[in-house]
Length: 301
Image (tube, rainbow, N blue to C red; front, top):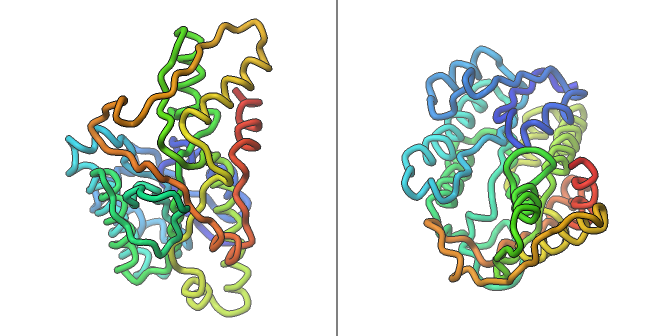
């Protein structure tokens, strides 16, 4: 349907789901990290020129939030310079770009869910590098869609859910931050959303032409789980479900703590709520409620 799709980050939580969810839309070219080093922009550009994809889907990122504070050059190489290169090469060959970003581009103040046009103000190197990537991609004049998401997790990979459930079996008590608010987002839901987006753009392209369809949908969108909770609330719900599933298990009790009590090298936004109405309006897609997705993910653990 869509020709070639060049997919990055195929070993990551979102990338591994995208391999399956996009398969019906075209030929998936999914090089691994050794074959496609995003920190090497020259190699990245060569690969794009060789593949000449119709779509470039980029879930890959430098996501070690705390480590980024001491490795800013590497964070910016992957989260900014690579994204700029993707945009420039996409513009040259007329490819569409789907890129994933983060709630960390915001300062995390207030209590209202952020909309796409709200003022950004990252408080960490990671957030600043992701914001710079957004800006560089937009400046290339490629046809692009940026999807900001939050608290991504799934049944595989390194994520909060898997970490907390493992720790709950190993310890008697766990201290969990209770003053950061947001919504967990299932990696598979993001992959399904991406497939819907490509289908919608391709349908418009069949009627209006490729370039016009890309321009019509280009922009930034928020795509996070519906509803809201805290890290403590997420942990409590996960452990409640685990107790119900395995009544014999001895699982840790949880203690609420503040962000100030859990010191980390990088600051985290206290408000990670994202308003996803634009996504629903433009693509007819509503992200899953985080409790519903949690139930689905735990069936796979």
